[in-house]
Length: 104
Image 1 (tube, rainbow, N blue to C red):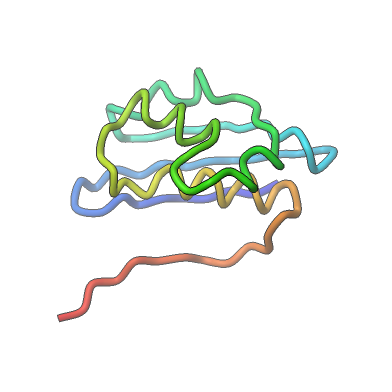
Image 2: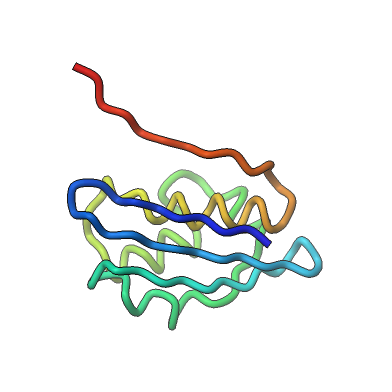
């Protein structure tokens, strides 16, 4: 099991994803978001194929396809947070925090 919490930035919205896989192939997702755009994402994105997600091209695959339906903001980090949860739950990656930091 892997859980990611994505704080999207100045909007203040938080999306929590829990990903569970019993076979390292099929990953079940539970998605909760304070973002009104992503509030219903979890209803549509319940199960994904780990290899399809982990080896898709940047901006492609089932997670980006589903997220694109709800949010049109190209810099939104939520899709990447979901992908990271899938990768860790299916043992395609090790868990490690990511971040984007602004410097002046």
